Length: 323
Ligand code: ZN
Image 1 (cartoon, rainbow, N blue to C red):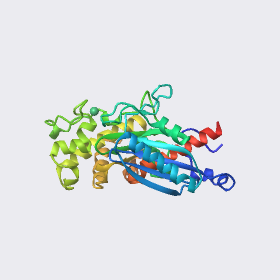
Image 2: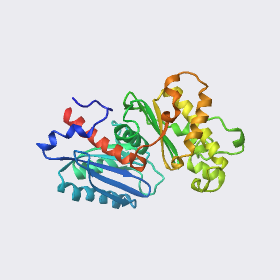
Image 3: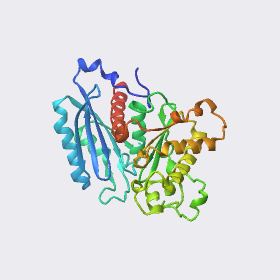
Image 4: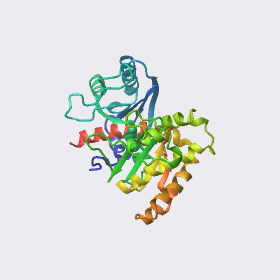
């Protein structure tokens, strides 16, 4: 009816039923290294409750999330589904015995945690689990910078680099999620002596252009580097190389950037200028003429992930209802 897998699930879908049935509520959780953001939204998309919970032990933290939903939901309706965005690695294989688990993470006490099962059992709701970058892409698609297109790439450049790729309105997924951050890129001439920061590959994209790599190369946090510092020309070069590769491989309508490094707005004109040179006028002429519309920042900022989590929750509910 209103919905096919991977397509947008507009809040408007629930408008008519909310007047007659018990109000369905949707939960979103974004689990990060220092805190978990929990939100409860009603069927019109209004956030009814929101709580940040510090990340401590897995037992304590998950119990606090569960208690938040148990206490907040009955005041507004009935919690029907939960979208969880988490640091990984996560198991996404529905046929795997550890489906929906955080598998082997360096975070002490968080390995082998049954994230999906814990909330499915303790809250008795539908649960969807997704990576943070894919969820942010989903958020931009549903309510952000990509509401007008079905083919785009969302890239986050922070401590690491990751990307969610939408093609034909669906998130691309191979045997696992794509690892755009680890693509190999040609070294800049002035960067020949830098070994890179990726513990697996040294000078892959993430090893050269993540916030962690910038810090390693210049021995200071990226936020301390002024706009005129040579660090940023180098950064724009590497990100433009990534963009040219993404352009030829996926033919996106736009490339959206988020993450801590990309709040430095002076980076965008630099990336666009580099990219224009690298494209050399080859193919997709019309679409790529307007670089200001092609390389853009997130519209949702820090709320992209949690917006995506709520979209996942809505999708899970409708999928179950329509099946
Ligand atoms: Zn790497």
